[in-house]
Structures are given as structure tokens and as C-alpha cells.
Amino acid sequence: MTELLATAARWIQLDPDPATATELQELVDDSAENQVAYAALERLFAGRLAFGTAGLRAELGPGPLRMNRLVVRQTAAGLLRYAAEKLREAQSTGTHRIVIGYDARHQSDEFAVDTAEIFQEAGWQVHLFDQPGPTPLLARQVVVHDADIGVMVTASHNPPLDNGYKVYFGGELSRFLEPDGLGAGAQIVAPFDQQIAATIAELVAADFAADSTTGSVESAPVESASARRRAPSGVLLIGAEARADYQREALQLLDVGDYPHRDLTVVYTAMHGVGGQSVTELLEAAGFARVIPVAEQFAPDPDFPTADFPNPEEPGALDLALLAAAEHEADLVLANDPDADRLSAAVYDEHAQQWRQLNGDEMGALLGAHIISRGPLRTGWQSAGSAPGPAIGNSVVSSRLLGKLCAARGIGHEETLTGFKWLARVPNLIFGYEEAIGFDVDPANIRDKDGIGAALIFCELIADLKAEGKTAISALDDIAAEAGVHLTDQVTIRVDDITQLGHITAQLRSAPPTRIGGAAVTETYDLVKDALPGQEFAASKSTDVLIFLTEDDDRVIVRPSGTEPKVKCYLEAVAQPASADPADVIDARQRATTRLAQLRSAMETILS
Image (cartoon, rainbow, N blue to C red):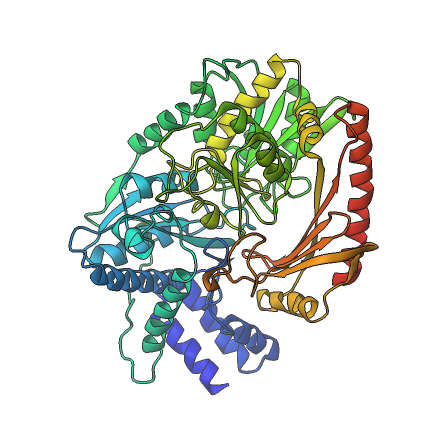
């Protein structure tokens, strides 16, 4: 107890934020006579935030397991120390640059300014966005400025009380750490994330040592919120010119000769995030004149008043957009998540006589097929030495459909671990996607998922289908006739604490199923020690993922979430149509639907 209270007292001493320092002090005071308060204090100091699938992400609050100014300053200081050491090893003596972006969540601007201050004081050239903006714009600026580091302050689609911190490597730092050049401008991967975490831990240990008198990231408390959000002197602001360049480059992706159609009514929601202006202005500049924003969700709002969980995939998240779509007889509904790196879509299903939200695998198949037909949307894609021609990639938890379509069409395809940090490193990537509605249609320029550029190209393909008298639903049937019906679903197990995530997979690993839904398990991959099918194992890619394949061509994948306190189980059922006849495709879809329900029931029982 004494050690915990001493640690909390030191944290309060170092915390530059009066709000979180006061909150923690009140909890310490209450813990003397209140066991509930003491237990809450223990939970706050039970570990430290670690880099997951997409950086740091947690609820705002005091202590090392929450997002706050001290955690951010420690992270930035550790990142700086790590980068400086590696650049010295590389004998780099030039100007080192960092670009920093942030969304409109609570304290995002403060965390961005804290990061800017630490790097500015160390003599780095700091480029900071002048206002909240989308993640893909930050990702693009890492490449534009050939920056050694990029930081995006965002919790993406997490609940309103969360925030997060994404880190990208580029420039000389990236070229030294990954000489093949494939990591330039992409988010960090293992082992670099672990090495940064170790550097942060060293810094924190020194700050909390018994003989420590000053902190390595000390900053005088600033009472004024406006002062905490003010960029330090000498920081270079990224503004309207960069946003205009992004739009100009996105418009270059269009093929106005072969795909000139713009007859489309689109309802769009920004989900209270930062994508609204970028998407609507881009679509208008592309010639899509009828774009109808959902007014209640258009302006950035960190409280997300119409969406408790601002993820377009969550039930009810698109209700307002679908009401507007019915009112305006729209052709398409588009939705970004709050930092606009993801894209969701809904279309009207004539057979069911209702709107239907497409899942990420369906959108990935549609976009992938469109880009295969069109060819690379931009030349000069990233290569690695004598790598083969253009390739399409998707994460392992995404459907196998696009891989089969690529095989049928004779184009390269690669499957990666979950997260765009891995997809971005696929040589010659021209399109990548993950089932969690993440798409990158311009990998040559943006080394991350991009819900803005994807919105533009999705409108292009839907407008083209409409001009041909087709729909997204019929296009999916055409793809199924060629490569088989692939239906996907998820079972989600929520836990009370993110530290419990590994327990479920550990139990499954010790007693793996031999049959799932009546079908024998024929192959099992444990990615802690096994490689992805057809690839070579590397320790840096070891991850807590279990894959089960059955004799019926089912696939079941179980993995802890990298961003939320839940374990995800990904299901895929496959059925081959007897022919390309629509009736045979319908029959295959019905068979796959039945099998998917059996898989869901089986895994709910196994994981319970």
C-alpha cells in the first residue's frame, strides 16, 4: 500500500495537468478509508499503456493506464530518445522532422502541443496541423515532408471518453530501420514498438526512482486551456495548402475518360468527426453535385451526442443517415468514423425493399474488383528491389474472397497480419483493405487507411454500376459467381479489463477444438509460433491469433482486439455456385448463410 501511494504521489507531482492531478489526489485521499477507492487506484497503476494494433488508446484520466498529458509527454520523450539514438547510429546529422496531427476529441490538441513542445525543445523541425483534421491527411504529410516521425492524436472510432496516439516512421529514421523502404510513412511495427516502449519504461523508471528530484518531462502546470493548446514558438503550421494538395492528388485517382458518370445522390455522415469538410468538398470537386450531409452529425463534437459508440459499424450508428437517404431517395449512404480513416456504406436492396449496410468484406471485394478492372489508380507504387508486379492485399481476418478473385484475374495478392501498418508494407501495393471498414486506394501516397479517398473511388464505382443498370448487390453476385460465395460474421466477447484479453486465447490454445459446427478441423495455425499460411515465420510478427480451417472450407479466427477490451472471433463460410446462373448463386448464398449460423452457434458455445 505504501509503495502504491508513493507512486501516486510522485505521479501527481509530475503531472502537468491540474485536472488529472486533482482527480488522482482525491482518489488517493479517499483510498485511506475507502476500499473501493483503493481498488480503483490499484487498477490505474496496474501497468502501462502499450502500443497495440494502432498505437496507444485508452480512456482519458489519471495514471499510466489512462490517456493524459503526463502519459503523452512520457511517450513523446521516449519516442524522441529512441529516434535520436537510432539516428546517431545511422550517422544522420541533418535536420530531423516530425509532423503532428490531431482530431477533435477531448484534449487531442493539448496532447499534440505537448508532443510539439518536447520535440521543439530538442531542436527538431516540428510541423503541426493548424486545426483538427483526418488521420489520412497526417499520414500524407509524413511522406510529403520526408519526416522521421509522424504522430496522430486520435482514438479513431472508440467511445467519447477515449483518446489515443498513433506513431509513424519515415525519412532517414525509417530508411535506417527498414532498408527495403517499405515502412516509410507507415505506422510502427514490431520490434520498433517494443523498443520504444522499453525506452519509455527506462525514462519513467528514472523519474520514479527514490532519489529522483526532477522529472525528465517536467512541465509547469498551465491553468489556461487556451494556453495549453497554443503551438510553441518556432513550430511550422500545416494548413490550407496541405488540405488543397490532398484534394488535388485524390482527384488524380479518377478515370474521367472510362468512368465519367456522376449521376449519384449521396447521403454522407461525418459521425461528429473531422472528415465532413474534406469529403463533401472532394466529392463536389469531382463532380458529384448531390451530396447531402447529415446535419446533426456533420460538425466535429467530442461528446458524440447522437452516437454513444461513434463507429459506423455499430447498430444504430447510421439511423440518421438512412432516414435522410429515404427522404432524398439517395443512391448511396457513406459514413466516416471520427478521424475519417475508415469508410462505411449502405445501398438500397431492391429485393429486400430496404436499405442494407455493406460490411467491410463486401466493400473490399467491390473496391478490389473495381481496381483490378481499372488497373493501378496511380503509377509509382512502392517497390522492394526485384518485387513482382502490382499487388492487392488484405488482412488475415478479412475474407479470402479477394485473394481468390486476384488468383482468377492473374494479379498478385498478399495476406498480412491485422492492421494497416502491415498492409502498408506489401511490395507494390495498389489497394489494401481490412474487414473493419479500412481501405487504402492510394498506397503510393498514403501509407495508411484512408476513408476520404476511398469515399471518392466508391462513388466512382457505384455511379458506373448505376449507369450500366446494375447495383452493388448485383455486382457482389457477379463476384460470387466468379470466385464463390464468401460470407463473414463475428462473435465478440467483451471483458471488464483489457489485461484479461489473453486469457480466452490461452484457454483455447491449451484445448483447441477438433470439430466446429460438426466439421472436422483440418488445419490450425497459432500465430504466436506459426507463420501465416504460405509465409515464413518471423519473431517480429508473432501475435496472439489462432486460425482454424475445417473440412467444409470454413475458417474461424480468434484474436484479442488491439484497441478495445474484447476478444474477436471472425467467421467465414464458403459455398461454390454450381454455375454463374443467378439461381445457382442464390442457392450457394443460402447454403453459406446456413453454415455461417452454425459456425456462430458453435463458437459462442466454445468461447463461453
